[in-house]
Length: 323
Length: 313
Image (cartoon, rainbow over all chains, first blue to last red; front, top):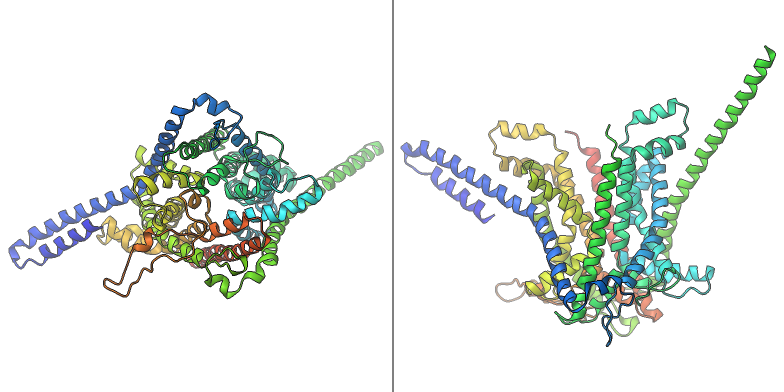
């Protein structure tokens, strides 16, 4: 910005030069200086756009740098295959599997809720609902997506868990089931809105062809629209997985905070994200092993979401339908 | 002959039965779809009503003017809402210029080459990075490498990075909606590219950009995990130094480096305590938080609705 104002001043002084003979020259100079100004502005805008790339690079550098320090103390193989995670104990063990298991179990529960509900909602809104129902439902779903996750955590711990305890009497106060279910409800709006966009992008002619063959709405939507929109629907599922894996507060509040190597959703467990929060709440000194473990946990998380995103790209490419 | 008509009548009935059956499935699906929608409505109502049920009594004027306290009935959210507002100010000041500039570049200036491709793919991928990872980035970069400490400045910049993709995407969509004719008109009158952008593209897309900014800020105000990661304190019984002072030069930036807490962290702190009295405070803080984010999102949705209705090129 500073550069921009400087050139503006240059233009004004050169334009107001009293020498008549210099007018031709000054208008040329003005063109030249305004050209420089244009280039400077373009460069500044380019830097702003580049800032997002710098953010990504910084994320990778920070995560890898701190993790590498940890992996000098802890063999990377033990980190990947160890089934005990007690980095802050006197006899520390650094096996990420319990945290990974917690993340996978809660994400699986969330997806079991979000994928069917999101898909059905999207099919309903895109193929069945009238204009008015859609105009009411869509903003509502958007509002639902805007509720802070810490509030959903409150809901899981103090509302859903007590209800589940009535149905399942030996459910502990902290458990993966209720956190996963609430997380599922939380993700539904994301999944349904992207699924719906994909379905609405399917050309009308395909539906008309199907109706002309005598198919009902449900047949058309399940056998024509969904397959045609599959690449977009897959992208929605992948986004749902990423959100479930990266979700933090619901799990930190309602899933309990002990690493637990189990597949049983009725038990409490800790996820990768909840571990990072639990460590950050205590005041860990910069550069300690505990400090580095949260970066290693973050790197694991990042690699997982990256893996899902690549899978999503591949799915989209494989099933893309061009019209 | 008569055998033939009997056969057609029978198969006609079969077909009719088949059609009826499939139409019934249509009806069943509509019921299932509405039920899914209802699950969302019921979940949200349960969420909100349970918080109102538990927390309504705590929503007194004192709740907004008291600091957090060891005694639950005297505890309030003063330091939390002040902290939230200050952090949001930093976030908006950082994310809006950067995001809008990036959006303008990608939509108006960017040549078609691999650098642009990388930037575009990168913006999409950044939107999918878990928010806690931004917290780790901020812990490494803002808190330690740049030495901003566990301050309002660090928190604001962290959330700015987090909502940057939202602002960029909103800016791009708003700019893309402007017809090419507007640009051509400006060029025909001798305007340079920047003059066209500054005098036409930015003003005409400002409502769309504003919508995106509000949605981004509504998301930022509820974010908890990255702020915990950079080490916001959960118990703050003082306010940051005021930005306006009585002595020259009347303006102070000390508040930027002050320790702080924000609304969602205050709520998290109360919800993770076993005493029921603190959980009532959590419910009350939750009501405030939900109303705030709903109001912001509602404003954005209304703005967009009005925009769509009034926009005629």
